[in-house]
Image (tube, rainbow, N blue to C red; front, side, top):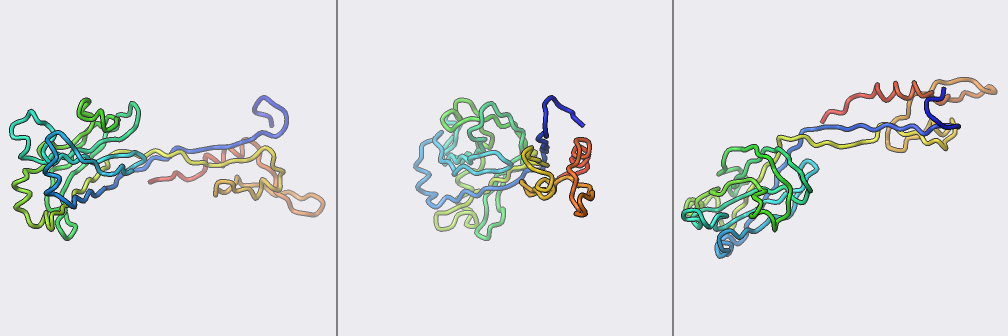
Length: 228
């Protein structure tokens, strides 16, 4: 049965787009807290870029506050999350920023928030207000009196990110037009089982018949849904 323009054997393939809930966290350890306090207001120190849900992020630490025009900006630490390096992206995600105690438990944190993250690069952040977070994350005086949060001039922030769907495109089936029937029966280019082949006899030896287009389509439609 011919279903497309052309002569000879057709190449046939299928793919799937799979969605799964995305979540993860990143830790930012400050190992010289007293030294970071020398950074001027509105200046930040970034975490490394980390990946969650197929996107890249940065955690942005402002030791003396992000907004120099606000009242008493030096009294607070500002902490922000940024969607890093994606052109024209607008992603709605949930995030929660916390501080861990010496045992690794969350000992301080603000409630989780859901915001729309606009993509950008670090140089544009303050101007465009593209990151999301807390201008007054914690008062420095309150932080420094908590011995469970700071020890040996060190503290650790935790950033949890989730609440959105990660989409991934995966191969479902592929059949090379240059294969012969015997090769097609055993082909497994992507770690997937090929369509079911019916057997027929030829010269007393069992062989597998290459499925027609309808059988190939039906096999693809019958594959189980991949749930994240």
